[in-house]
Length: 278
Ligand code: PAF
Image (cartoon, rainbow, N blue to C red; front, side, top):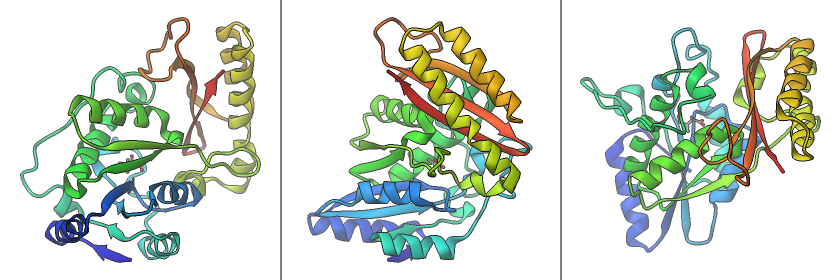
């Protein structure tokens, strides 16, 4: 696997593959890779398709006081994992390559990015959609893989691709979980052993509430119970809510697919998760 840091070199590699009739898949990441990312690479690997994984810790999607400075960076280990997973090229631009002096453009997606993480982290999704648009223009992929773990991000990127007529297929990859149900996340390494033990309350509370709502219990009661059990486990809850699975509207119309979304903090670690309400 090649590691590339300059845009001209990336474009030359992609042009060579295209000239040979190959397709290109992009797996955008911020590094600190785990089995969840490897599932994205696995989903990207198809006959006749080259896989590019990007690693870029995007400062524009972190708010003031968030974990940009301590976000785990371990490119050498990530590169080994990607090589073993069959990735063809690691695109790892420096911040000055992604955002040269004078950079002044932002890409914003309204509506779907407004609630939940969009409300709690006000400039977060503008940062995501700006860098994702840049990555799409840099790599020009036919296919891109995003994890369902960041459900709202996935819907925001779907909206972006549809609205801007980008000829890119989006593959959604199910959340990968530890044996006890905790969703894999690069931020799980922040958890102390006690916090890690308590963290299992999040997928449990989420599952209990989703099943209750799915069988017809009052959503407000089920969500209040989930909030109470998270608080009892030591979480500080940002939101626990049911939304339209596609538009993220907080009051889904009857018959629309629904998603239960949770974000909560354990100490200094913010965890998010989601599940279908069926
Ligand atoms: O999901 C992530 O890791 C990031 O939000 C992404 C899509 C790589 C953009 O920086």
